[in-house]
Length: 216
Image (cartoon, rainbow, N blue to C red):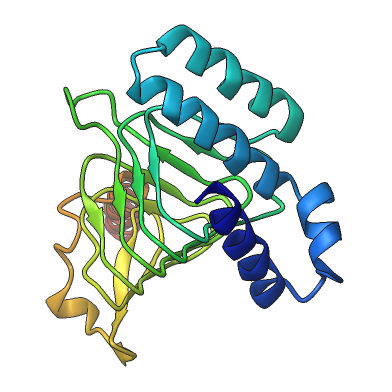
């Protein structure tokens, strides 16, 4: 089983990474493959209540690859981690089969939840460079998270999410009307709100100055 999973993982890298020149290169030199190998061992220990040993193995993997995966995280088959540096995957995170994750991604929590604290990623999901997926919700199958997006709530299957906070811009290849999706993440944009307030204040000041100059 272990060797079959490793064989499938190497083939997944060869299929998805145009820079990969052969299975031996992927097996020996790709940090994502090493990180998953460490995690499989650490997760087995974690599931068998060998928590300290699990953390030791996971920390060895982190120091060797720059990829931090908690031993409790559940990871499916054929995960491809491209480059990988700076990836963090939390304890209760779950990742389905055939996913692609780029460097700088965080599958983390918000600090407000107890128990299940981290996201569940469906099958065949792509998460772009620097994206942050935070909270105990699901990202549906075949979805895409754009680079540097901050995802704070559930993403439906077959969707593309973009922005901070992330909003769904496509579903099943069809563009989404922002007017109907304004409450997609139920989180306001504090920067935009502050800028709007500053603009309103400047308009009021300009109006008062204009009125004063007219009266004088």
